[in-house]
Length: 609
Image 1 (cartoon, rainbow, N blue to C red):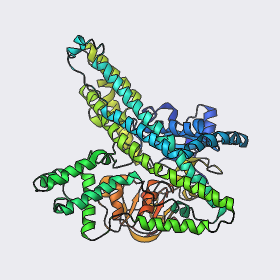
Image 2 (image 1 turned 45 degrees about the horizontal axis):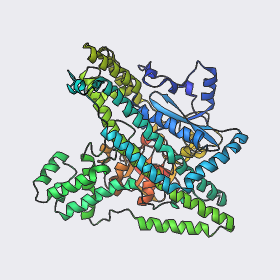
Image 3 (image 1 turned 60 degrees about the vertical axis):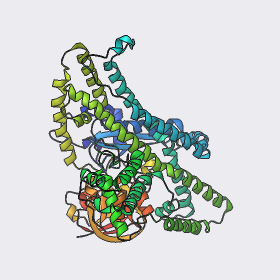
Image 4 (image 1 turned 90 degrees about the horizontal axis):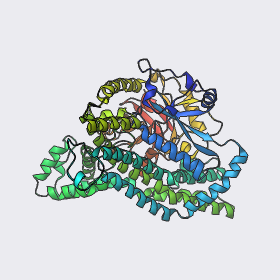
């Protein structure tokens, strides 16, 4: 397997100097021999799971947050024996990551007792500790919701004098920004408190079962923990409930795909029972409409509460399905029956009592911890992030008022430390009564960065660079990103996609079983999801929980990135439809309208040209 040398990847003409848009530690370097050698000997893969587009400078906050959080829990808190953390770099705006292995067998042995003691405590007390996590997480969300971003007045209120407050709105603005950033970083500390262990429990179970049954498909193991209800489906359930209520109240004609929310709302208000339905909608909105239209990792990902057209489209889909007599519920009983059948089939083949007990114990642990793997998404990437992005926009309003940026979303073209520097410029200029220097510095720099981002988007990022390892062991890398020695071989076979029309077959992970044929629909955003037609095959970089109504229409799902525990794979298993994930290149090769043969049992896709 041969992948490009990270130091041979060229800068895109016209973007020279792009490195200043990101933290300096994200650069591949050539002037430090020790670091250069380490980078060339490491294996780096493009994190398209979280960043299907080039990353904006401010949006690196979440990448830096999980850079710290995942690695600290792997290496400094729980000490996962064979792996430390995950290192990060950026090339032409695209994030590349590299699992850092523990190569010394003796060191691995020394780490085992620490991991057994610390991780074992969490596994034994999982439900109690997870309940505490929920309290911490909801308190953090409440903090960010209630955080006030003060505006800068011409003259402070008299109470500043009469109440001897002793501080200005300028100081409070700087503090509020610091508090906002710190809440974001703290949120991600909580994010990884359980997540590494959740994936690790599945990897332990997978490893044990594959040693007992070397020929067992990996997909069979994932089916053994399917059919577990998780709150990430709650937002979709709310849409189904509202669709049913709309039909019961005779409001179904007022809700359709073609109308904007403002028109739908006006129509509902004019209906005798419209207010009843609108009241139910308001109940559903908090917190369940804080689900992002994307992964939640980008400032551009709107929540349903930011754009009610998105959930209304889903409600309209379900209304149409119900009126056709289609069952819109997930086939949980069928999934669970198949799960129990597979468990019993393999369990009955185990001859050793010790092995049977280990099988039962590992399966029980995997099923116990699995809900967190999906549930945390709602609390962090969706609810918290949706509130956070809008708080940053409140900061942007102030920067716009003082001339540092021309448009609200220009703020995301600045690093978070540059924003802090800009706010100091604003408040000191406000305090002094002069014009901030940033009004001349930042607008032209932001315009240049906009041009750089456009050039980044036109670049085709290679799925992997560097030196492929002999064995990949990091749990996240395997089950979330779908990077294994097998997938690396598949990616390396398709390095040159300059002629995508010549490619007739793709391979990925067998995410969910089944075989179907149908027309492809390539979707890269929630807006494009609205174009899906009945019976099409969804082809996407990755999927989001807010896309759930799409699964009522499609036959199968294909993604560029993701492993057997990625969102797309999990949702397809819960809906009982085929999925092939982690193909590396699907959205670059497949075009809307192409006929596809998708085998979710083998992970193969045939393009019928």
